[in-house]
Image (cartoon, rainbow, N blue to C red):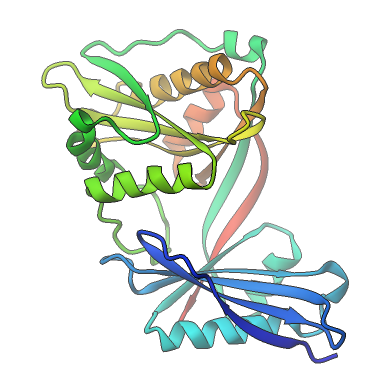
Length: 290
């Protein structure tokens, strides 16, 4: 069977990217696979594309994935991209597929889950960091903290990315607001805990958590980071612990919290381990140089 590949276009562009899509179908019209190519559009990342390919289990090893990959790579080149990244769970069919088609492994990630029960939450040590205060908000950052919070996002600049050509993410107030609006638009809830320097009121670290709109299932940590000049004081653990407690208090039907961390980020892996997160699986980030 030679699958038919139909190009599609996502009608809505995001604040920092737009998407192309392809649908693979069998001779009878039944869908057998799909591919999505996210084209980053912000300065600092406009060389990059992110690929997702899915093929129905019964249709694998029949050329569907290869045809979808060819279409996506051709489009990425036409868009002037120099790198395509994709992620696969280690040991999965996608892991073998990407490795066999010229992608190189550039980053390893550990996924972990915190079981959100009263007993687990109560077991977290009460923390405090002299000279700092915690503040928190839902959705968009309050106007009085917006500039300081946007500035604090440089805490992610030196996040271990190993060999990934991820570029530079430039944060400003507009981007911070756009991310919060995107989460709200899809019906999820964004909650942020931030560490503030008591001396000048500036935000020096943050921990973001996204919860399904119905408050059930698992929440997802988006990012936890501390500015370099304020590290080594326990702020990351303090913020993440506060995020856990808040999730339990505000969403009693929430089952757990998910997080993923680069294997080279020893400090954050240690924070997760101390708080009681349990590893669930590992994945690999792959990159194709065009």
